[in-house]
Amino acid sequence: MEGWRLIAGALVATAGIVLMLLTMARVRERRGATGADVAVAGAISFVVLVILALLVLLVLPAGIAWGVVIVLGVTVTVMMLAS
View 1 (cartoon, rainbow, N blue to C red):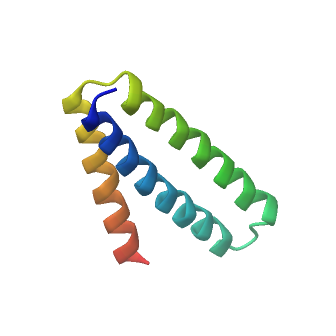
View 2: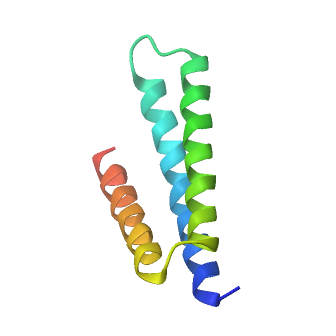
């Protein structure tokens, strides 16, 4: 496996975990949200993260993979600043 794929996959996983936790926190802060709602949001986020990481590691070409990394990085930055 190429080195750039491993680096991009690690960055996607790191940003994805942060986004998953931020999503769960936002769901928890909503009025009327139960623990089950938070768990469902976490499960959906985790599945999307795993699929995206596998695509970056195995299928996507370099340009698209790095584009995904950049989009995730910007999204994490904006969500952290908005908190």
